[in-house]
Image 1 (cartoon, helix red, strand yellow):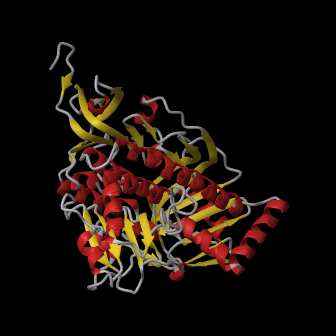
Image 2 (image 1 turned 45 degrees about the vertical axis):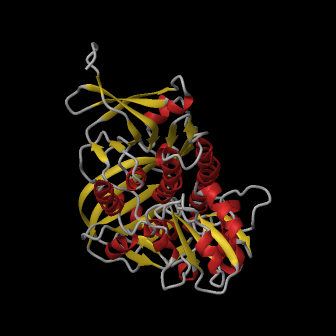
Length: 499
């Protein structure tokens, strides 16, 4: 302890602030890769059931599959392979080019339980009831030796300083980390006085997810799996502060207006109001400090993309931080986090906001626009596939350098590999996977130099007769590809990307 009463603690490689799904996945990834991680959370150690997220999309399930977690969540969630929107548009997910041809309905706390267990087993140091009060960067005399100092106040009220090479703020919409590094959070409230309630239902809904908008009212119903349902509702004419008292009669009325009946709601164990914002930080990185999840972007719940986008932020950032900290890549690799994920966040803001505006269309021209959009999506296959690919994440691709192979930056589905295995099993452990043609054994044997340990690269072969050689990043996107590649080309690609 120094003379000011502040205790200085030994440095850690990464400090993650916030123990929601984004922070838990990121911390677990880093610890699995052998990076010392401290996770700081101001709340007590308690998985809350007051979550707003209820859906895992196909791309997120693929990322969880690459961590051997998807099957556990599939066992407790309920799959849904068909959605009905705007009363007439049916979205068929059974045709998705994924192992997960559905969305999985389950509350956020089930995801958090699985991710927390993994993080604990990987060795993450948890500090609950510890509030982050300040973040400052120390460049050091040598930029390579710089770091970040995080001031925290523990449950005993004592101030401590933690030091790390990097800090990730996954601490939500009111992010202390984002404020500490001076990043604004521009945007606006889109929907005010949204009501939330956890209720029992006397009548079971006909569909797993029930959602509709009629006139001025919108309502959404989803099961917790414990006998309760989460209700999310909104009425255009009921614009009151979040602090305004809420009773079950108001929840029932909004539900009746939007869904035609209230399903005999009773026994509300929790009710609240909130407002839904559309906001995005202009940068996801300031020096050695990164933002992920709701600290970087928030948007309306339409499309169920919030938790999914945050988890995919974490999947993108974690392997890059691990590569840089282990010395396998230069710090410039971290610049690609902003380049790849910021456009995705902006796109999600637009799509989720567009869904809400179409759902709540009231004026003649907006109703006409909704009719046109619905007709196009219902009858034009390519447009429907693009929209479905965007919402589920399977259609996402990242920017590729000029002159790259056409596959560079694209997501790789869970393809079959020779010997009966599959890609997302091979990706486990945060590895790159080099997939070579089955008829080119010299490429498979020569591509990985001795300097590349097996835990960082798996060399596999296509189960099919494909001639393309593909290097897949740990997050399942193509880092490099070539048609009819030689062993020398594959070795060069591995050296450049894996280290």
